[in-house]
Image (cartoon, rainbow, N blue to C red; front, side, top):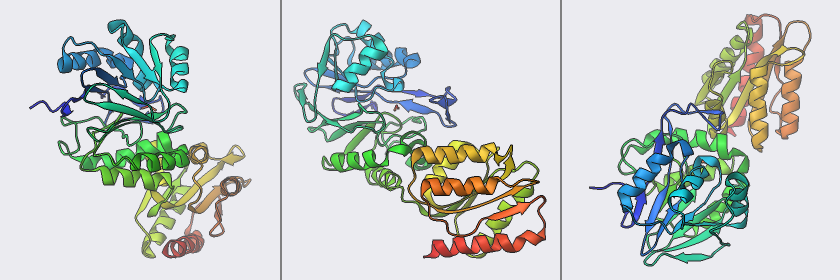
Length: 395
Ligand code: FEO
């Protein structure tokens, strides 16, 4: 059984990367990542996307295994971020006759990144390309998550080649399609991928969902992670919820602490929330937590409580970093509470309040601001904050 032939004439030729530690130099990859590329084989052959260039020789081996020495007629470029496009130059050297298919923005980027401006075919929204037995058509999904992003649709097979859309972190373990592996381990990685990579672009993702939903794909071939078939409803639900910034009930408490006093406020607030029936609750020490995991849960849950001490007349840097990540993604609303501390000059709580104002997040309650060390004297104010937040969550 050749499981890389997903459907007759549709071959998976991508690769797993279990060595890169940070995607885009930023986001951790504890379970690796895959760079997916596909062949659509009719009378003519199209390669859809490539892989990160350090894996280019494996891509070539996979292509050869699928089609031997047959030439490739077209290279369809759905997305130009170099994790998918940086093997284009090598492909062109190996297959000099290959026609590179992309929209105007794609072709401009191919010139800019790789100096290629010949042997290209510019396509527009709704254009079709017949391979003989398979027909590809192209639909633009700009800003998911670059301006040139598009999807390729093969109507005969009901296959959507979706680019980064519906992608996830996590290498593909053995199987290719979701029925050949355990899909459950990808859901958190999908949320983390979405929050880190696509999170700023909720509105374009919603437009893309409306557009590709009308195609009713039965197979979704993304550029990262398993090929989706059986799990398409779950995958679409995750992308839909996240792109509507619709948090599910749950609390993230994210705090910074130098000597444990602010940490005790976080612990007390978490305990009080649990006592009042709020949950699930996840608590992160921002000096140690993986920021992509915290960001994932900020996207996932509807309630966020941030705390930190005052540092250099501002907010403790790990807490400030989280706020920057959230602000950059324009999350429109969360139930937000905050707390902080200072030794001799107050600043952290003010900074957190300014963040809420900047985000236009409606304050739920007064923050708790502690001077110097934690003691039982602070229990009541932590309980009050937790009570207001729990009350808002129950509404
Ligand atoms: Fe997987 Fe936006 O590249």
